[in-house]
Structures are given as structure tokens and as C-alpha cells.
Image 1 (cartoon, rainbow, N blue to C red):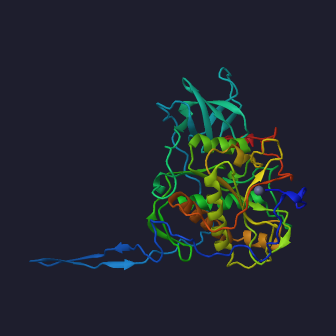
Image 2: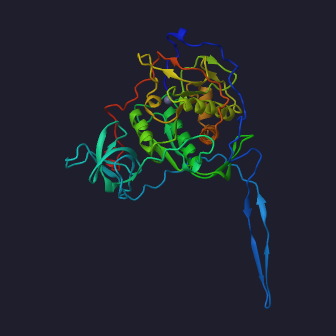
Image 3: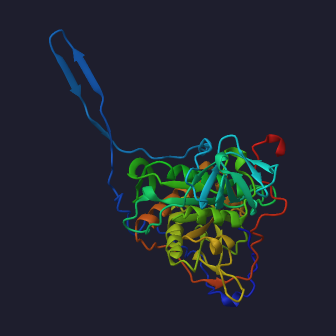
Length: 429
Ligand SMILES: [Zn+2]
């Protein structure tokens, strides 16, 4: 998120010197019910030895109980899942999410066009607007409407509505993970040495997806994520930038990202960012998390997120920097009706937060972001926060503040006229 270091109209802010006061809480106030602290759910290994003689059969069974192993730090996130076979859209009424099937899907500007304008790349997801016969109208990554044939995509209706909090089944969770920025013109913030925010955001988001995609356990006393089974895999995980490796580096409009989450009827959305424009030096990480003031649960989500980010980052060494006011925050537009300043928070209908983990503009923190260990720590924190937010009524202990009107500039959110939909045809790129 780009932001100005100069605060205009600072009189409207509850300004206080927060140097050294950032929340360094290291443990959640309440563990999730599915994974009480200090309980190890163990893998049972059952080697079987069979000894056969001419007259009797003896079977010896030994049971060994092993503690779950730490998830650790994969050097790289996993590749994207293989694109599905297209053409299973029977019964789809036109509202939900479509995934471009294997081989790509031609997109048409109008229903009666003879030629498509692009062969959209397999694995891309679009929100569906309506269906007319064999055609589905979609909202593209470039914030425009287009038509696609139903037999070239896989359609999925929105997730079932469900109450989040204690009792919520994580196996039913639909979660949107949104790596901020992307493409040649929207790199986000950058470090003095040239590390682009769009690149680290995507790596972190993919690591969050990988954590959510299989059952896990968490040692809540330490925050260590384990290869256990206490927490089921999330039912549906959507990454707003699809494609393995550099293929995930493309422009995706803010309208597109929110529309996709709304079309999936996601239970939670987290936009992964890193910051620029620090104001003061800090003794601890200056993590900020923006919440939606119009959705009360979003503030609880942000407070939990702040707490988990600080728990994950504090063991690392850096010359930390931050803003005068850190933690869970909300910015309102100076427009008369004071909606949320940030488009993704304004337009998304479910609890959504923007995480500004650390300051990539500060070389010391950028050096951390350049390591897999730190990016995994960021992903681990987001995962823990998602589990706590969705499956408990935990209010979170992260520092927070009330919404303020923001007169700064965050840059454009909608896709540029030069935006290009990723193509299946390599000669299009
Ligand atoms: Zn950003």
C-alpha cells in the first residue's frame, strides 16, 4: 500500500507517540477449541511383522506414537493446482465463480461477437454475473465485463452462508487470499535495493494458501504450526492472482478482487501487503492491519491479525520503523458519506482486512522479506489469525484504534487501460 509519509490534517488523528509501545503479546488470549494448547494429537504408526511357520502364524504388532512434526519453512510455495477439465457447468445459474478450464477459455466482448479478444489462461478465476444459455457473463481481472462459453470453464455457486465464530466448521470455510499489486505498472512499494512489494506479497499469499489447503495443528503456546489434523483444510481457498511462478505477476483490479470474493460469498478475505512511508523508529515491528468500520467483525479480525503478526515477527531482528499510530486501524474517505478509504475494504461484503506486515521501504525490514523464513512467519501468522477469527469468539489482543478520515493518497485501485488479461497463448504476452 503506498501512502504518504506526510500526514495532512493530522489534527483529526488521535496522535500519540507509540515508539516502544507496540503490542508484543506473544500468545493468543484463548486457544481455538479444536486445538487446545499443549495437547499433541499424534500419528499412530503401526508396523506389522508377520512370521509364518509350517504350523502356526504369529502376528506381532507394535504401536509407536510420534508427536506431530513442525510444518517448517518450505523453500518455495507449491505450484498452483492443475487446471480442472472444463465443461462441468450444468445447472449453474450464472451467479458464483468460474475457473478457466485446462486449455484456456476464449473471452468475447459481446454475445454475438465471432472472434474472442483473448484466450484466457487456464486456472484464472472470474466472478460470474449472469448466464444466458451456453454463455456466462464474467468480470475480468481488468475490471471489465466479458462473455465466456460455459463448456470452457468450471462453475461453482457461492459458498453457503454460515455464522463465523465459535462452532464454525473450518472445513466449510471459504477464504480469499489477495496478494496486493501485480503486473508491470503496479509493483506496490519497493525496497531501496529494488525488492518489489508485489513479489513478496504473492509469495506470502501462496504460503497462506498452502497452509489452508491441508489439515494442520497449531501449538498455540508457541504459535508453531504442525503437520497435525486438529484443524481441517479450509473448504475453498481462492487466490486472486493465479498461476505458478512469474505467471502470477499480472495486474488485477481492485474491483475484480472484491467482486471475486463477493461472488464466492467468502467468509473472510485477507489482502497481503507490506508498507512504505514510515514515520518513526520503533523497538518492535510496526505492523498495521486495516479493518472495515462498516463490518464490526472486521475489527475483531484485524485485532487478532495484529497480535499474530507481532508474535510472528518479534523474534526477528531489524531496525524496525512504524507509524505514529500502529495496529488495527481504519481509514475513512474525506467524501461526505465517509465510506472506507480503501476500495477493497469498501467493496467487499465479508469481513476483510489489509495486512501491512512490515515496511519494505526500510531496507532492514526488506532484508527480512527477502528470506523464506520471514515470509513463512508472515504466512503462519495470517493462518493462525484466520483460524482464530473464524472458529472462536476471541476478541484479539492487538492494539487498535477508531476510524479516522484519511487525506493521503493510496493511488489508483481500478485496472489501468493498459491492463492485459493473462493469455493461454504465449504469443499474446
Ligand atoms: Zn501494498
